[in-house]
Length: 264
Image (cartoon, rainbow, N blue to C red):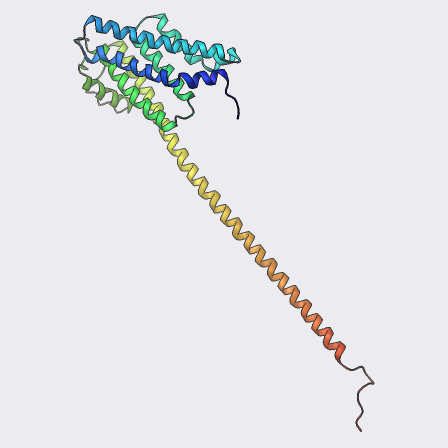
């Protein structure tokens, strides 16, 4: 059995703990937004939890970088991870921590071989709906001209935005809210393309399986017909040989000329 590398063992060991931290981040991010009356101490605790989770993912990236056999190749292949680690340091905004944590969680999800594409897409849709709703609610609720005031309005807006329906009954009015809208629209189009491609690939694979089975049956029928043709040829050859042998036997048993019996 092939022995796993140190990097692969680390990724397998930290996969579940990082997912647990991601859930903790989701709760810490959602509580101050959903509960507008949350006190300053609760908000501070949630903010600390967010930073701790981001720090854990940043530490995970650094450890994987240290364990990678070729560090330059690792950085080149995981440049999005590096951007997600550096992003919140540039400016301490909660939205930047949200984006970076989502990117890091998504990268680790894609690296896990046991997570199938359908599960990943469903999880991505649910995550984008939830965090998009919370993010737009946090920036639009206090806007004087905004009309996204409740979590229900935010969820409805996120759903219509991701599906590119855009009824227009709710729309962001701030610059940051419109940036979130652009991100949700692009993400919705990308996920729809992934789902469509996955369905098309499934149909193509089924058709290919049917074609392979049909070709196999056709080849088997052709081989059987060839065997029947060869058997008929062999039977015809044996029949001709037998007739020739019988003809020779009859010719040998007839009396020679001049040796016919004379009448008395």
